[in-house]
Image 1 (cartoon, rainbow, N blue to C red):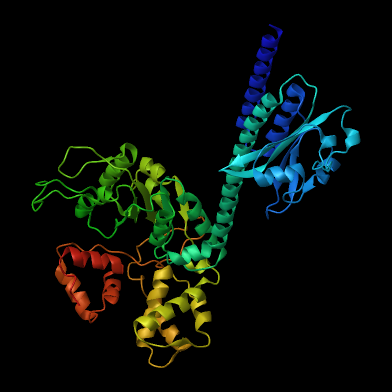
Image 2: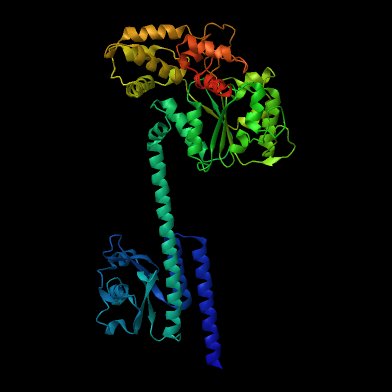
Amino acid sequence: MAQAAESTTDLALESLVLSESAQLFGRSLEPEATVPAVLRLLSQLMGLNRGRVVLPDEDGGALRIRHSYGLRPEERRRGVYAPGEGITGQVMASGRVSVVQDVDAEPGFLFRAVDRETLPPGTVCFIAVPIIMDGAPLGVLACHRLRNRPRAFQADLHVLQIIAAMIGQTLRLSELVHERTSRLEQQNRALRSALEREGLQHGILGSSPLLKEALQQATRVAATDATVMLLGESGTGKEKFARMIHTNSERRDGPFVCINCAAIPEQLLETELFGHERGAFTGAVRTRQGKVELAEGGTLFLDEIGDMNLELQAKLLRLLQEKTVQRVGGDRDIPVNIRVITATHQDLQKAVNQGRFRLDLFYRLNVIPLHLPALRDRVGDVALLARHFLGTFNHRHRRSLTLGSGVIARLESFPWPGNIRQLENVIERTVLVVDGPMIGAADIEQILREESTIGTADASAAPPSDQRGGHRTSEGSSRPYQRVHETAPEVLRAAIHRCRGNKTQAARELGLSARQLHYRLKKLGLSNQG
């Protein structure tokens, strides 16, 4: 009867130790906190004293006591074993349990960490259990106990083997967490150091502080799914930033669909965005998906959002709120999963005050405003970009021009109202018109003098405001965009003819961007003009 009661008590004690140990390991994956606490339980509740966990060095050499309970610091420091040395080294090498019935009678017991004088009188035993992971020893769990304790060795050994398995799992999980954390830290460092390379990958060149700040902000917001509004003057690279945000987001495998709201006539913009059903209007011979549906699972980039009329603004607001779209001529709500990025060179707050832009839509779009710096504010970037464009156009047009003395200084002194797009255009024109092997300051001066006259024809055009709340560009500094009706192909043909097929020059003459002219030619079936 007494033996049965004692057995019941032992089982209850084992259950308590294992339960408490499991809870400790479940609270934290840090071995420095959990393993000594478990060794304390073994000592106080089961009499398995001076517990220690011995692990190999990172290079797989010496074994060292890494975690313990009941050992003084100097005893821990002494607990170092060569591979295969002593009882601990043998257990690590063989992966088998070792039970020493009497440490005084065992020649292989080294008394390395604990002197015999510090052990209690009487017969002291030593139990060493391998910590096995994936079939191989990861370390050793060991402890002392008195020989004359009533509990059977086998019972203690059973508990130690279970605890060793728990410790092994904790060590492995901790290692994986630390490896992952280390990788993330390395990735973050690499991300910070690669901002310029990241920008270069997406065609965003420069090293100025303002550009780096914009790149950092774009990288941060890319990981979210929030609506981003890119603010900046025309030609600052808003589409490139939008593509960069898309490529660095979780939607990178989805489509990136771009639509320029200023380049498409108002009558066509709604069907371009939302599509149409068959028979919705004359010529609608089949159902057609719009840009919104085509962006499913990806990103929809709405450039020049400030040019959208109020009626379309209301439909865009519904799209953002309901995440559904209705095609023109249809009444069925089509669910869509897209991220929206918008861009504008206009002061939308002023447009709201003037009643040209909906306040509720403005708040929906302006969740994360991202300001793109004007080229004139990007210190040092004009020279970098000029040399890059020179190399590009030398290769494209089979030239080998170089920049003469004073050219970079003159380029850096120009205000660049058209920003990067204007600089690119100037360099290409220079490569095409200069005869000699070197571009001189006089060549650049002539072209910049011509550039200075662009945009002054429409004095009523309001200059874009600086979205940072700073200065406004000078009157006439931005190119006025005029709308060309879609039924006026003769206007486009005449302009291209006058410019001898140079569509870039024709677009400038018409007050359009090259992209706007290309869109109109495509819509009118005139893509082969010139």
